[in-house]
Image (cartoon, rainbow, N blue to C red; front, side, top):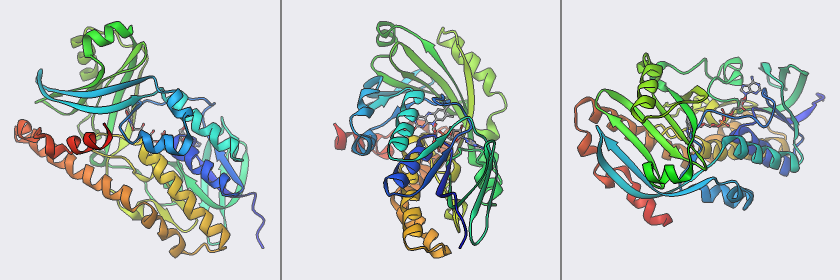
Length: 363
Ligand SMILES: Cc1cc2nc3c(=O)[nH]c(=O)nc-3n(C[C@H](O)[C@H](O)[C@H](O)COP(=O)(O)OP(=O)(O)OC[C@H]3O[C@@H](n4cnc5c(N)ncnc54)[C@H](O)[C@@H]3O)c2cc1C
């Protein structure tokens, strides 16, 4: 019988990893959560949640509501300065530092052991165990969950994904800029704003928060050559002065299940490509896939079954999420086609975006 340090090791304490660790620990699994940053850490992100916030509140309770910085009722999209869409689309704005740390604390309260400031450098899975090498030593577990983001070490070291191609990933740049709430209301109203331009197949955004706005833009990595210059132009155009500027990649692939699991290894969140590509939103998919990964781990440990079949169940647990991600991927393809062929106005037939249906459900 092999000696294991833990049932499960989760690499990365973003929303995906913390959600996975929280559920594993609550199931009674011996769980270790490893994070390379000192926590609480920030993350380049708009920090915007759409109506799916209800799902997150349903799991983690009203503590989540307590850290909402701003609730907005709408979303406006401009094309070449002309208003194209003004929909009622309830959204919730967070500081990622607070949001992610809240879920990490839930994982610890449930019994997971957390080691932060601890970089994982190698992961080796064989038929009997997983070995995880990090700054604090080497740990052996029955299963590993890779929740270490878009440049996942777990994905690379276990051969699941050697990296995203320029076509399958986006680069986004953002900055948080101080602004009084009065000024925010005056300039942007209480809504998120998107700006589209003929010469840029991507988005620019302003997301209002409490006493600050998140300003950013993103496009596929393959087209991101002059992104920083474009960001500076955007800041000038809006008459703003950027503070700390951060850039980060977002996976944008139409998901393939072969990329996110194998025997004893599961990838969730950005590491597994669980992001809605059309809008580049990955917080909720990270939580959904993290919790699904925990379900698979629990079954594997309690039935002492680490066969491929057991890990293929991950596809079943993520079925609805993958369906929605594929739908979002199709929307992105149509959007890119419309941009390329100057058909963008047609694209804004509201029904097509499904935003009206969503809004009716949640208002
Ligand atoms: C500019 C920008 C704006 C965005 N805006 C939104 C938005 O408004 N709404 C939305 O839903 N999504 C948004 N996203 C996407 C969203 O940020 C991600 O999809 C989400 O953070 C994925 O969560 P995760 O837990 O999978 O990964 P992450 O949040 O990236 O967490 C991964 C964690 O793993 C840790 N880690 C990495 N490597 C190692 C290692 N070797 N050892 C140990 N730990 C490691 C990292 O430090 C990190 O804490 C945005 C992304 C960008 C770049």
